Image (tube, rainbow, N blue to C red; front, side, top):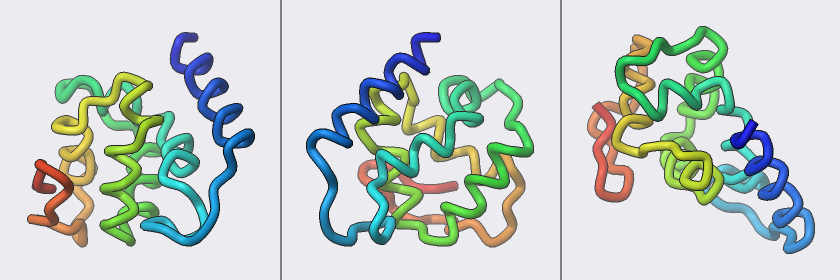
Amino acid sequence: MRFICILGLVVLVISIVGVNGAGECGNVSPDTEAFKLAPCASAAQNENSAVSGTCCDRIKKIGQNPSCLCAVMLSNTAKSSGIKPEIAMTIPKRCNIQDRPVGYKCGPYTLP
């Protein structure tokens, strides 16, 4: 429930402030892309939590652009949802994504 309330608040703020220009995720902000990773919430908070197929599918799609995946995992939405970046970075490996960007530097983290 808390997660949904936080997401609602972030959507409200984004709609009021607006997002202009193209960034790491093209014309979509990393915060907006982060909403698509809601099925990954528990896996991004606990490394022992199972990663759902839906989460893996979404990570694989966003991960086609490593800079976008990085921006999403370090976004304000992810942080305010309780995501732990050091754990979130392990999800592509936990999903057994073969073409994941191994070694990609994402802020202070490196994708395994």
